[in-house]
Length: 121
Image (spheres, rainbow, N blue to C red):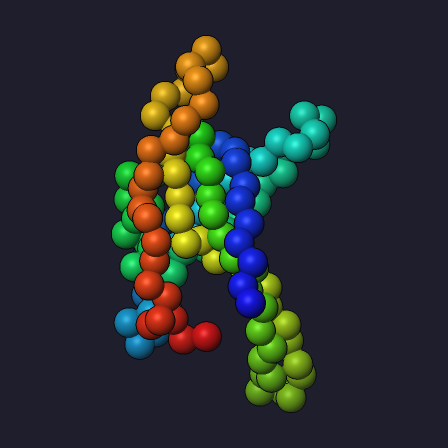
């Protein structure tokens, strides 16, 4: 069973979409998350395949709510060493319509859901 998580913050960075092989596309979104104002965190999440296109309207400075799943996998490299990967895989991003602190907090949908049946894992 897959659990869904949500993080709210400000877009710190957004990488261009890159093809990493066999038509598989990837894009990173870095969100500045402030749980404790003394220690803001920069959290990198990744968008895969069709979700990469859904980030086209997102820009640094936007306030966002990102919905994601935690994914993990094991890989054995050429030296025979086992390596573990963990990724925060985006499936939905909501963008706040304004950046004025006096506005009520509400979000517009960037996407509703993603068909992840074509993901390689």
